[in-house]
Image 1 (cartoon, helix red, strand yellow):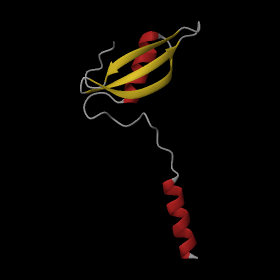
Image 2: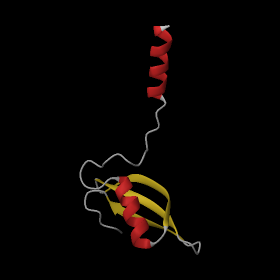
Image 3: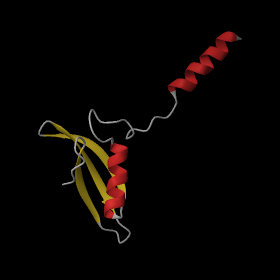
Image 4: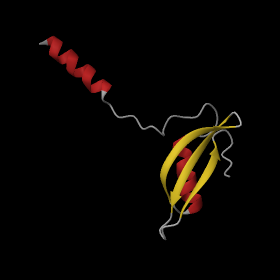
Amino acid sequence: MPLLLAAGSLAALSFAPTPAYAAPAAAGMSMDQAVKMAEKRFHARVVKAETQKEGGRNVYVLRLLNETGHVWTVHVDSATGAVK
């Protein structure tokens, strides 16, 4: 019986969901913070987010969609929060 309980505990730990965008950047802003900032600033919803390297820096590439259906992409520097 203890073996079943231990196996159940391990299974629960291995399947625990972890948000892909919530991990903090090495320095500066996390992707979650960048998404929230962009949604507030542009009054739009982020529909896709990924991290890329640009010039040796981590940059969050965010695809936004507003309520009129306009889609565009912004780049947020993870260290400074600067938006391009």
